[in-house]
Amino acid sequence: MHELGVVFHIIDSIEEVAKENEVSHVSKVVLEVGEVSAIVNDYLEDCWNWAVKKHPIMTDCKLEIRDIPAITFCEDCKQTYETVKYGKTCPYCQSGHTYLVQGNEANIKEIEVE
View: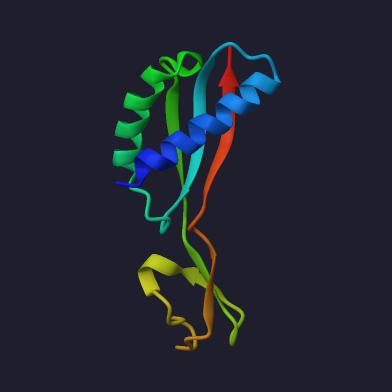
């Protein structure tokens, strides 16, 4: 379960930003998680709820997860399409010359403080 490591990295980043800005408590964090990022949102939430109790600045901090759809680009026909639905093969021209444009990232979108 790599989600726990992801949560620790996020909390470390947030605590660093909070310290730089003299913030005493973080009340909410909004994360963007890519559809094909290999992060399981339910596991991420479970790890989050456990980990924030260990960090005084994050106690009772809520987590909101926003999904980023996976989109692939075809180099041959220049079209984009849904990655999960069609995979690596372009549904328009059946080319395999494609690459993922978005959907494998995880970003801290917002940090709400008191």
